[in-house]
Image (cartoon, rainbow, N blue to C red; front, side, top):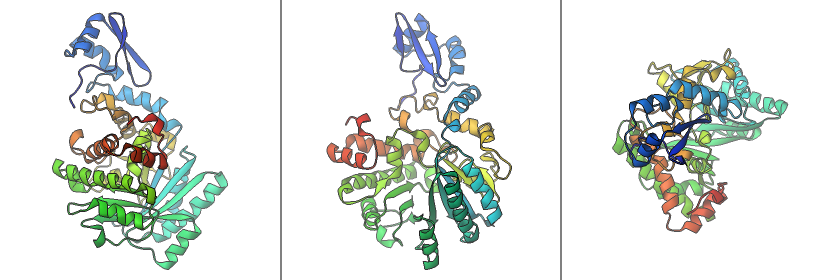
Length: 403
């Protein structure tokens, strides 16, 4: 893909043309500008000065103005994040039940009718806060008549007493593990879904899919290892593994309920629901009650980068989160036509890449590599009919896709 010097598409009006930008902004191109745009000529200085604030020129955009528009007119006002990750222990800190209450209250202050509360107990010491949060959220959902999906991430099968608690709270177990070899080497157990970090030694993605399907899981998210953010080669290995896994998931869909959650989110054409997208799809709550735009943002705080912190759940209002500097930057980053490397990508309308973990150029980003791989598989599948049937089974509106 090459950077496009002029915006596209153009609406021809005689010798002139009209282009559009975010926030319903429109610009007329003079005959000379329209001719240059059609011919691929460079954007002149005068044209760049006039058009850049509208956000229609790749790589030349008034980010602050664009972000203000997208926040004011966009998803934060009517959708809000779907996933709320409650980190009850991690980084040597443990959440208290009182802090868990404040975090749950903040989550319920967001506007989405149905919430997903995910318990993350990294150090294994946060069970008291986790159980309180589950019980309190379940009661609050019933009082408020809100939809609630409870999930508890586990690296091993739950003990009998925890399994009984999860059943009583109608909470699903999410299998969280690292794929450092073959599936036969992993400790798998029956769960609702899985988050699998694809480490350097991971092999046999088809075997992993078959093993997860045999356990009756309904969903899987393949996650890149930290090395994939520092090495383009590692990013490509991760994308290749996850792509083969997705192809196998399609192949066995008639006998399995397993689906690739990231591929489904992309093909549903709701970029704000792609797992992990900061603030638009997810929020994270640290053990001390801080609200972060994502789990990756919380992890970066351990290295001293607090730019992803939105505030304290005991003091912050969700309405105020949208005005935070990092929120404006995130929403602006979601406008793909403004990115030179994304401007010509045909998938840009369905893509959303978490930016907190990005430390490389877009095309070397493991999320970019993964999204390209997943979407390429859909449009190059040898058995188109089977592919479409799998997507339809997973809830994708296939009338929008022509293969």
